[in-house]
Image (cartoon, rainbow, N blue to C red; front, side, top):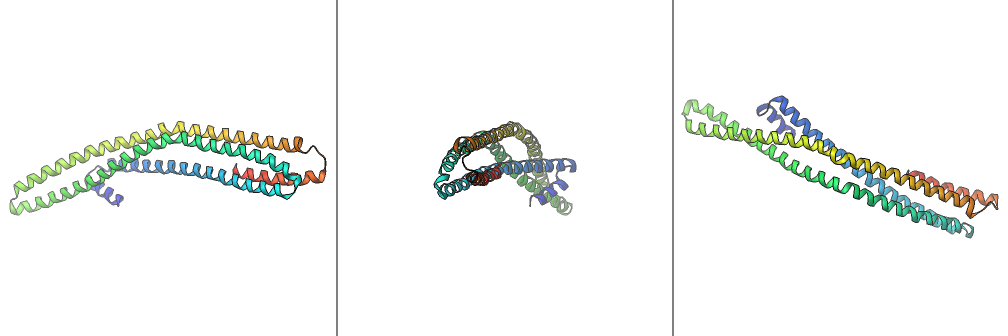
Length: 247
């Protein structure tokens, strides 16, 4: 629907170059908003994956702990790891929300205002075209009916509408340019903070798993029984595979 409106505007109200530039900016704004929305959804999905993984690992620990009394110590150690991991996940989610909340709110305000003005632009352009068409018909009738008064009034109406349209068009062109520039101003530092958050999270997770491996191989079992250790190792590898999925 908007494309047909824009096509009519291109043909009758605006120079083609101006109309093309306007539509390009409108497209750029919409594409930028889609990308930012996708980024937000992707990170939310990532956080959900972390939470699902934690639940899966918790079930695995319960199974390991119930296999035999000899594996209870492994289960206790891993439960401690999961407790720390749960805190890390909660901190990650809280930090993400703190980093993005203001940026997304600022963008939504700008987007809402721009969207309202674009609707005004579409409505005004159609009204302007309709009155212009009425003016053209009156000009045709004037040749036969001498309707000078009506023609002059309609000409004034069309001229006023065109002035309003061009003023709004110029305002929107500037608004869209500012918004595209503003998106970078708003989100560039936000992305930098999110990258730093991700690096910090993964570093802490790596340290957590290193601590777990150290406890299992040195403190917990001390090398008493090869068969027993092979069994423990298989269990540990299964757990570690789950952690790799999250990475």
